[in-house]
Length: 334
Image 1 (cartoon, one colour):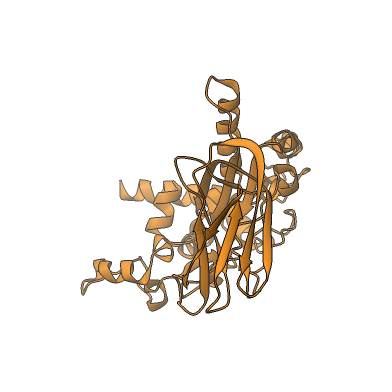
Image 2: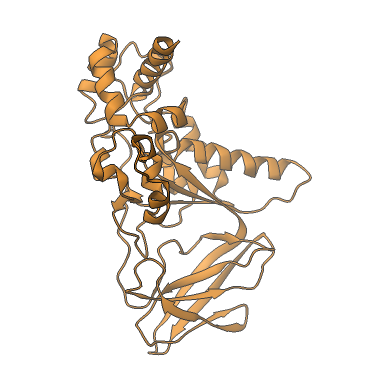
């Protein structure tokens, strides 16, 4: 359903159709939907730091790095002309220093660590620049790392500790928190249970921002244990990671640390996840060779999804209304 609706129609189009043709309840819900995220737990998403010598934002204390056979990359930024060395497991590794891959206007350093077995032993490392500055990472583990990307179905958060009300499961009170965007069944109990996974699961949220040009780094939440992240994390990503971790723990498989990275932006067309080069290869002189339905000039340009795109910042679609429109259109076509 999500793939079909998002690829066939933009959310703004669905919003218009639902307001015009949807049932009264759907029209009312959409009309007062501007504050649908207001009740969710507050989130702090700092921008990428700007220190001359630093680690990339995606790296941090307590993170999970990919285990063997992969070799995890540690990287960051440094002044032009600097040399960087990383000390890890009593080894000193020389970093490769080069312009960043996005704009070429900043200088990056990067090192491939030795392949490390998965395990709950915590590690640390130091990175030192030729100008005498040393920075450190500590408390990180090696295991499995999963990236959870997508649109609103992936962005949909667990919710708040008090959002779920079993007596209102049919949304008789349509203004209740659980009837808006972002409240899973028994959210409070699930959020409370997240602490049981603090020993081996780490969570990271990419800041929701956008840019018409590729960026060398992004902002983010930092690596947090589940109990510290709480209900603002993607419900799909959390349940997936939780269940994988549980299966590994309860079977004859090897239990390993798990890192989950949430990178999603609700209401975005596929084209906004594509590079300018990829879009250019898809475009042609015929109307059906333009990337998306509305064929507006702005929609034929790439958007680097570091967060919620400005044209979708008022996105207030509810799932029941999406389903109503989808079913109605299917019936019309048949």
